[in-house]
Structures are given as structure tokens and as C-alpha cells.
Length: 376
Ligand SMILES: Nc1ncnc2c1ncn2[C@@H]1O[C@H](COP(=O)(O)OP(=O)(O)OP(=O)(O)O)[C@@H](O)[C@H]1O
Image 1 (cartoon, rainbow, N blue to C red):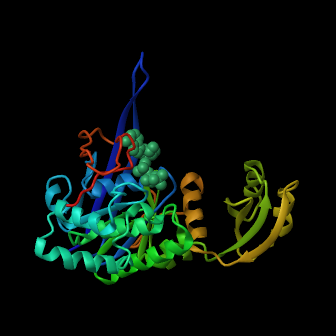
Image 2: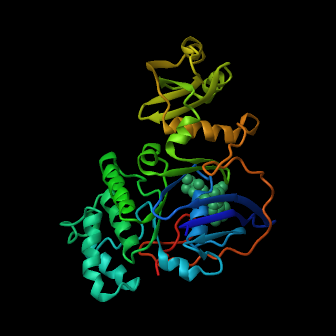
């Protein structure tokens, strides 16, 4: 039996804007998403901001009703059997909310264990095992307010696992976590998988996805643009050369000039402190150094290197193709691929069913990303 089965999932948000003349605005956040996750698999959902990742996760973990389409988790339908789904899943989202700062990690876990109905006779052993798994054993008596962001995140994961879920949703667990803590977090996630837990992970960090995920779906504009193993995704750009230029002050006009050069397949700029890395994907074997540097006329340039493509380059290429449908490659076929979907308007559907989260420090619930706890 599959852990997750999503078929043509769609979700449209309807919001009202304007006071005197209110208008209804519809946002098609997810526009026909189909994928399957096998039991024990670590599956990554990657995409730019606003791509529809959180909305997809929330439909799968029963916090939002799909506008149309179906989803099953361990065979249970998310819309018609949400209680059975909730019993089998855990949900951990990035950020600071969801823990009691004034309590120790141990007391937090004891409290949530009670809330989630963990059998009293199992509680002690379960908590000790989880503290061990997330690397907090020995620090469990300290108050959470003194914890680093990485430690909090690992405690969040322990909390999400208290009721021994078979499927864990991890929504950007490493957001705002420093590189050393992020490495520890990756180790924890890898251990979870080794224990047989199915994990659906969203992240903005490509290296993390590359290291951890068995398969990855790249989502943009509410549809899946590519799906496969990290190697398979990388093979999309294998035939390309990557030119990486350290720059200070390159603007969108410079990038446009590079984009317009014959033999250039994609351009992206990443801020790295005071400098930028301008990453240019070129046709394999094309020597575009001179032309690219000429297009950066007036910009201070540092090191220029050519290198092999990474998952990040594949990701940039996929997302850029999604932005420019006319340049999109033909949709690949086969079980490991999902091509661009036709963007038909989503039919109107049932109203959202977001349970009000009863989270410590949850504040107002106007932020759509901050879902409630779904553990049974
Ligand atoms: N409650 C809501 N009401 C109206 N629009 C919403 C709501 N929640 C999300 N959206 C919109 O739906 C789209 C998808 O949002 P979603 O949060 O699922 O994306 P995401 O891929 O998780 O983004 P991020 O990486 O920034 O978290 C965005 O355009 C977003 O503005």
C-alpha cells in the first residue's frame, strides 16, 4: 500500500478585498497535482515561494479540504476519513511556534504525549527514545527558551513523532537554522527514514534535498514541473555548462542581457552577503566568458569559475522553464516524471476546513502557513 497518493489535487482560495466595494479574489494555489509516495520513502517537495507546497501538504494532512481531486494517506481518504489519517501522521513546520518556552524539553514532550493520548506505560520509554533520536538526550531538563533554533527544531520533530506516526510531514524544518545545526537536523531526518518512517519534506535548500531525498517533485505555479530521483533531475542539466561569477551590484537589466545571449539557457543571481553569485547555464562546450562579462559591464567582478551542474542548477532550469512556457521542454513520460499540466480554471469547491490550532504561542491564525497540530 502506498503511503501517499495524490490525484489531480486542486485548491483555490477565495478572499474578499476592498471595504466599500468588496471584491472576491480567487487564487489557484494548487492546480492539479498528482504524485505517489511509497512507504518508507523520503520524498521532497521543492518549489519557489508561493508555488503551492504548503497548500499541498495541508490538503494531505487534513488541515485543508481539496477544492477537487483526491488524496489518500495509507489508504485513508483525506476528505472522507480525516480522523484515520490524523491518527497515522505527524506534522512539523519550521519556525518558532508550537513549544512552551518556559518548560523544559522533557516537560514539553510529557505534556504533548498526554495531549496526543500516548499510553502512560509507553510514555517514558517513548520520550527517552525520541530525545535520543533527535540528539537532545542530556539537555532535556533545560528550559526551551535557552535552546538554539536547531535544538528547537529537533524538539519539534520529537513532538511530531510522539504518537509514532507512519508518515511525517516536515515543512521547511531547517528554515533559519545555522549550517552546523542544519547538518544535525539532516542526520535526524535520515535516521527517521532508516527507522521506516515515510517523510514528506519541503525545503528551500537544494543540498539538503539532494542529500536526503529518494525522489523529488519540483512544484511551481501550483503544478508539478518535474519529478524523479535527484540524479534524474540533475541529468536534465548534465549537458550544460555552468559559469559562476562573483559580482557586486548586478541588477535585473544585467541578467536580462545575459539571458538574451545565444547559447545561454538560464541565469540566476543569489545574494551571498555583500556579494552575489551570478549563475549562468550555457550550452555544453560553449565559451561565453567574454560575452557574459561584457553583459555585466559596469559591475565589479570577483572570481569566475566553470563547474559541473548541481541539483540547484537543475531546479533553476526547471523553475525558469515553468516561468516561460514557450521554452518548456516536452513533458517527459514514465513513472518518475510529471510534465507541465494544463492550467484550466479550478472548479469551485467546498469551503476550507481549517481547524483552529490550539498551539502555544500561536497568536492569531491569519497566517495561512501556520497550521494546527494534527496528531491524534
Ligand atoms: N489562505 C490563503 N488565502 C489566499 N491565498 C493563499 C492562502 N494561502 C496561500 N495562498 C496563496 O496560494 C499560493 C500558494 O501558497 P503556498 O503557501 O501553498 O506556497 P508555498 O509553495 O508553500 O510557498 P512558500 O515557499 O513561500 O512557503 C500563493 O500564491 C499564496 O499567496
